[in-house]
Length: 251
Image (cartoon, rainbow, N blue to C red):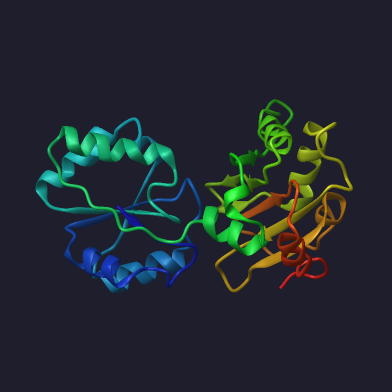
């Protein structure tokens, strides 16, 4: 189980050595997007083509997926860090049931990278929430309960933006903010300030500390592959100084 980090070029030497020895390479792209450029880079480094697998392959049909390891070692690639998505623990459990050995090669994750870039103290964050892509028939609001509880507990919240697997891009701030504001009445409002982060770990990264109204009006910058907010609770003097670095234009 190999983590791909946040961008092409994030593969470790240990990971490359493992890929070269593997009989086959599989990768999932549903927890976060992986560019074709990165897949091509992996194929060149490993000397073999990675094959994309679905969520069902790693959840509903994980038994069949793991059984292929009996014919030779398989490397499964994951965006970010392999075990940050809790469902991936199913792979380890099934491998142990089948008597297959498992090793994990960790990499950078949006959870630690975004929190670090935000300037807020990682030890003061509560549970993470996700703003979904809504439609006329699908408007879940449960994510706001996470934010509410964190604020009550004086904890910051990392709020991820939903990603469309087919397109490999995140919903835009102009779409996410109305969803957040509609669901969050009495919890957040247009003047609530947060740290907006897009494409962290990549050269296209953008960071801005602004009100939710201002974040909704940020100019689009092509297709954002990942985006999130850090909603502060009570900040220390050091945290206030750190987030203010991003209070004007993003860098």
